[in-house]
Length: 113
Image (tube, rainbow, N blue to C red; front, side):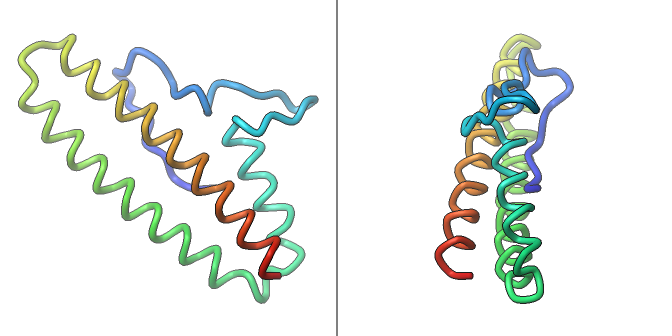
């Protein structure tokens, strides 16, 4: 699965990390999106590994950039509530981006392998 920062002090977990059930597929759940990539990627792992590793490395680099920008913004926040708002928005944004990229990776794997 792809890394997505979830800040401890945020007001909420991102919506894509708080939906879903093991009993009903939900395309808006990072858990289900990651499971799709994992299940399909295992079938062709010998060949797909490079693509999976590259997507993971790029995404994690982008997420670390987001963490650095968020940390800088929190350091400049005028109040604790402003800092919470910043980290809550960063958590939601990271979750959404992770879901989008996981779906994109699955689409790539299905059409390429």
